[in-house]
Length: 304
Image 1 (cartoon, rainbow, N blue to C red):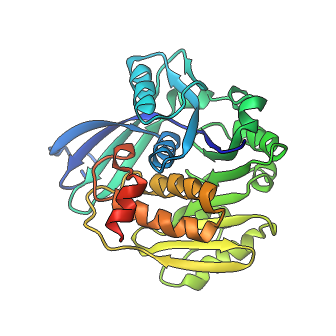
Image 2 (tube, helix red, strand yellow):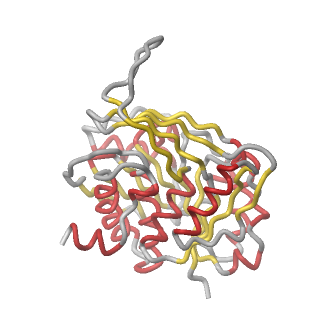
């Protein structure tokens, strides 16, 4: 029975500095504190889905270094299957993150490390057959995502692609994707059109220019402003929720993982996006990426 989310993606050790401001070029400043977290878009999204109660399998590569061992253990603590997580001789992926505490915004530099060696055939046909949703991002090789999505189409899997970072997609990968997930910058890059966040119609214009197939959908996350969903010529905007933001790192990943989990339950993209919008708002009230992902009950309790 297909009831599992398989995440093919990146896993990093996040090295996070919290400071009052961002240093100017050539400037040295003092930070307030330093922490390490499980990170990487793939791992963050896997944790978000797992905390919703979904059965999640993670497919990717960690390094043969100490970080690799720690990262695998952190996934297992979240009850995420790691049988398809392999070790690559070399360094694990890392992300250097500066969180500006006055605004809760962040600056991120990623070193791919082992992530650049992830392979689609790590997910066997048998494992693919037991997956209802395949979720990926662009922090692993695009040609491997393309191969996996092409195979998944023959297994009846729902293929969700987080187009992040903003890279150009091949025609094949574009056509093999069922649901695209982008933020405002990624939508503008994907459509090659400017986007005005103060004008919702400009979002629709960007989406229309993509010329999606009838069976393709797109979800646009707009930070604190909310989320815009397009499916089957229907468009709906869900406003953001006001919270006391502490750290926005991983909020987009929270949205995606929670949305995927809810797609298993309701099969309704609009309902799934609405619930994920609430979960993502709650995630920014805590420090860190994967550690800030809420449980389903926390979301229900907070927004009841």
